[in-house]
Amino acid sequence: MDSYYLDWANLLLRWLHVVTAIAWIGASLYFVMLDSSLEKPKDPESLDKGVGGEQWALHGGGFYNMQKYSLSPKKLPDNLHWSFWESYSTWISGFALFTVSYLANASTYLIDRTKMDWSPGAAIGVALAFFVVFWMAYDSICQLFGRRKHGDTIVGIGVALLVCFASWLACHWFAGRAAFILVGAMMATTMSGNVFFWIIPGQKKNVARMRAGQPVDPIHGQRGKQRSVHNTYFTLPVIFTMLSNHYSFTYTHEYNWVVLILIMAGGAAIRQYFVIRHRYKLGLAKNPLPYALTGIAILIATIVWMRPAPQPAQAAAPAVSAAPVGYAEIRPVLEQRCYSCHGAQVQMKNVRLDSPEGVRQHAQGIYQQAVATRVMPMNNATQMTDAERALLGRWFNGGGKID
Image (cartoon, rainbow, N blue to C red; front, side):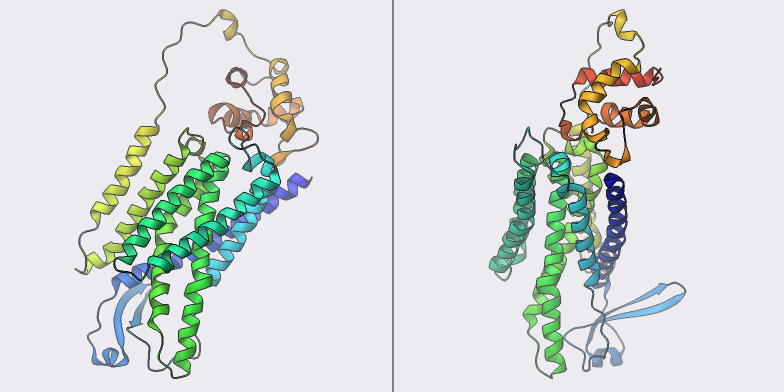
């Protein structure tokens, strides 16, 4: 019963996390597009107000005129919209989901004892440290090099190397599925950290000075813009890591850390195309198509590199191998490899396999998870052999009988 409620918690948190992430990422993508689409106003009234750029848009049957001031408006309105709760609610719901899905079941989902044979407590501690240490290293790079000559380039290279190292480390310390999620959560934590520690506080300081009739410090706007740009390049890599748990061929690959880095790099290159294309349409930037083609080329090269090797033709198997497999033959396999998570004591995902009725009900899932995708047992914690997977496959393809 506890597993049943845990599954509901997982579902509802995942639903909340997706909704809040759509709100946050959607707002981020919109404002990046808006910044890249601004044109200098031509009417004297807008110029006199200090408007540095504007965009006219049509949506939902109405006309919209978005304006951005070069410095600050002469008079601030009483009500200002602050974009921060989308970020905070996304992080809170995401961390809660990570806790329910991975930290609460560290032995099953977080730990791969063929990589690191540590206790659940140690694994949880190191996983949480990834969030803190990555943020501190990232923030230090930005502060040390961000305002130097060619600072954006130096910071970009430094952060890219940091992400690569963290990806390599996570994939060597944790189960592949958890490692991918951990890297994405680590980057998402940094995105929210940018909003919480720098973007919003800087904006509040400037607004307070403006209301007091004092000059604003441009560093807050510069730093906020820098961190906002970083967030937009993190977006597609983070979304990939959140989707990756559905595609085991990515995180179970021998060089899964390389797979992770390549796909994130491809996503970042494609994101660069969308960032620049709006300015290109206004004649303010070169054609960004090479960025998109580079990202697509990286993804295609990754797909080709990861393709399964062709299997050599096998000699005809003995006649006994073609004999139908019954429930009595697969029951010892299920008992040894599956009952620990899907038996009388524990029913992960509300799946129970210690009875013929349960096996009949979940026959398709058994085949998909243990034979086709080889995702289960999770991290192969119970050491299911290839022969046992083949036995389950013959049982299912033979009709999945339990008589």
